[in-house]
Image (cartoon, rainbow, N blue to C red; front, top):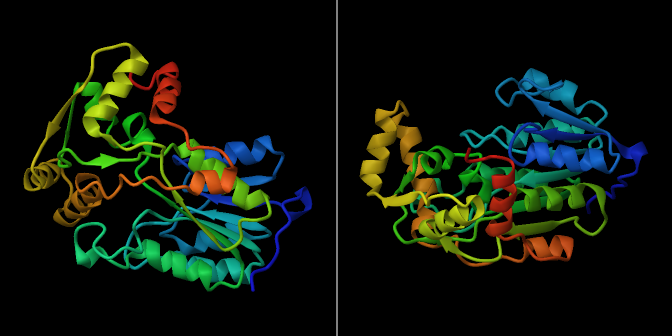
Amino acid sequence: MTQTYDASPAQSPVLVLGGTGKTGRRVVARLRELGVETRAASRSGQTPFDWESPATWAPALEGAAAVYIVPLDTEPSPTPAFVEQAVAAGVRRLVLLSARGVDVPGYFGDSALDGGPHLRGEEAVRSSGLAWTILRPGWFAQNFSEGVFLDGVRAGELALPVGDGRAAYVDTEDIAAVAVAALTEDGHDGQVYELSGPRALGVADVLDEIAKATGGARASYAPVEEAAFRDGLVAQGMSEVEAGLWTAALDPIRTSREAPLKDGVRRALGRPARDVADVFQDAAAEGAWG
C-alpha cells in the first residue's frame, strides 16, 4: 500500500532533480508559482546534486517530502540506490520521468536495449513503498527549439536517419504540468502516464510548422542511412557506443512506433495535449531560431 501525501506547505519542500533541464526547470517554475517550497537540484544549482557523486544525494534529500526524479540514463542505473536513500530520508512521494516504450521488447530496435535503466528505475519506485507516479513521454517537441535538433534547424538542414517515420512529439510544458499535478494533487498515486502530443508528424512536417511559426524559410530535411549517421557522430568525437545508442534512440521515430497517440495528458490534467504548432509559436516569440 502506498503512503498518502499532502502537498500543503507543511509537507514541503519538493526536490526536483535536473532542476535546470528541459522538464526540471519547468517543474520548478510551476511549483514555485503554486507557492510550494522547491529545491532545484543540479550539479551547479543552489542545491548541489550529481548522479555520479552519491555523496551529494543525502544533503539534497534531507527533509524533502517529495522528489521529481530525472534519471541518469546509464548502466548500471543509479536510480534504485537513490530511491533507497529517499526512503531512508523520509520522502513520501516519488514522481519518475521515464520514457515511452521502455516496457515494449524491441521498441528501440535492438534487444540489447530492452530492460534498460529506465525500466529498472520504474521497478525501484514501484517497490519503494512510497506513493509514486511514472511519466512516460515520447520525443520532446522542444528538441527542435532548444535541444539536439536545434543546430540543424538553424543551419537550414536537419539530417536524421528516420526516413518518413512519424512521431507524436510532446510538449515539455505538458510533461511538467503532469509532474506538478502528481506532486501536489490527490488521484495520481500508482499511475503510469503515457504522454504524447495530439498528432503524429514526420520531420518534414515539423519543419513546416517551424517555418509557419517563424514566418521564415523552411529548413530542409535530409534523410540519411543509419550507418552514415552513426559514422558522422563518431567523426564529431562521440564514442562508438554512444553513437550506437543515439542512433538506436531514433529508431522509434523511423519505424513510427512514436506515432500512436497517448492519453496521459488528458487523464492527468483533464485537457488535451498541446500541439506542436502552439509550442513553436511560443518558441518563435522567444527567439529560439534567431
